[in-house]
Length: 127
Image (tube, rainbow, N blue to C red; front, top):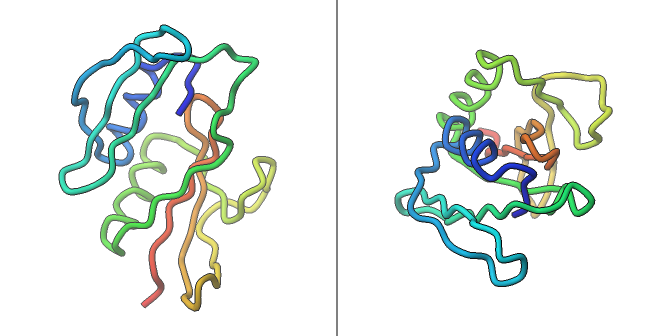
């Protein structure tokens, strides 16, 4: 994923979603130094510095987590003063948690914007 500042974006994903820094790499497309983030038993996230004209890249990323992790991330966002939204549009005025029916399941969701203006969706299956 692209970032204006890979360090700042890496800090966001480590603090909010529990990723850990694994290593760095040289991006073959840009020649820039990127950062590899990892979650134990989970996905890796590669962050590469991009020119601001290429951001946000991607525009949206979603993480499905268990209910306890969802609540923890939501509270952490609030404690850090991050605005959470109940629907995807970046200018959505309703803050908090929303609901979604998808793939035959019902989800609790919220959105927060990362430092590179990527729309980050956090979702969990509704109990």
